[in-house]
Length: 104
Length: 278
View 1: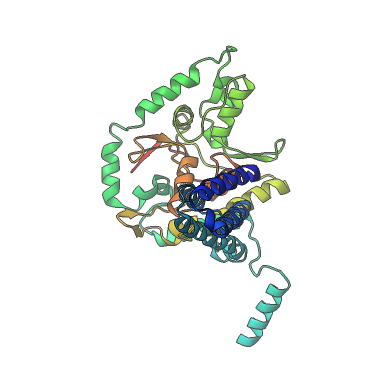
View 2 (view 1 turned 120 degrees about the horizontal axis):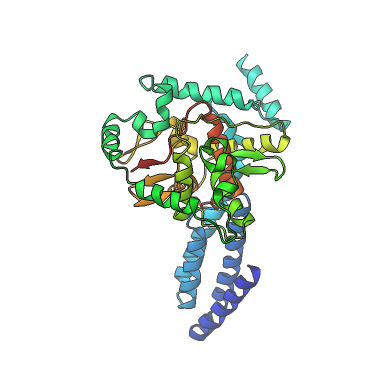
């Protein structure tokens, strides 16, 4: 999975670089954000709490970046990151709270 | 006194001890059953196997009409044909199961102490195929749902009697299923219990939410929404996706343990599958 992400990052960097060579920082920001958001998504998955649409958001972000729309790509990555953080928090919270719902 | 109680609770939490002592499965089951019997006093206990139709008289009338020519009949015929068709090695499904596979639905799910895991009806069907050199079937719908429906049909009237052996792995499987059932998931932050305990009898849009007691008795189910017969784990998957959680694999450990817990909660009721639902 890590290799796939690295390949996607490289592809996106090349594609975006072709249209926006003067905007390297934004591309790096996107790549960093993409990896960070994907790692968080995986963490939520390991906790059995990944949300339904997070992976789709990341795929859409990659597609937007490949088309050179980094602004849209960054928004999508941010949404995916928010979802993953919320999912991880949900997992941690539920470890404490689920037993309180058991019918007694 | 209140301050004293709060201090005690804080101390317990700081010590990492859950303030809720784990209940024994039978204690859970009795409380679970009583909840629904109290919430729906007009529904006889034995009628909870009919799911939503046990508490919604309008839907029940429609269902009774549907059952005159049940839409799962074709699947039953297919299931019987598949069940009786020999594998390439000449053996059949009947060779894998007690009593030739007829009337054995009540033996599932069970905890296999050799494998150290919960075995469901559909898992056993695929175990049978693989032990006879056949490829496993996909778990959500199609042939496996038809075979399972036929086997359920031959078991109508048998009593649900899930036994949890005195094996810490079996208790753990039950507890994991229980935790799954009561844990909120997904973007909508819903647990199974939110809809099917607290929410049972209420509505989500136009659909009344069914009670969990008896939930597993009538599977596989022909759903009008699917236009086909499908398995219990397909429904679990759909529920998880409806609350915008990533679904788990059908017949993965999570859903098998959930089925184990839910089946135990319905002990004493009878199997009446396959069913038909909207």
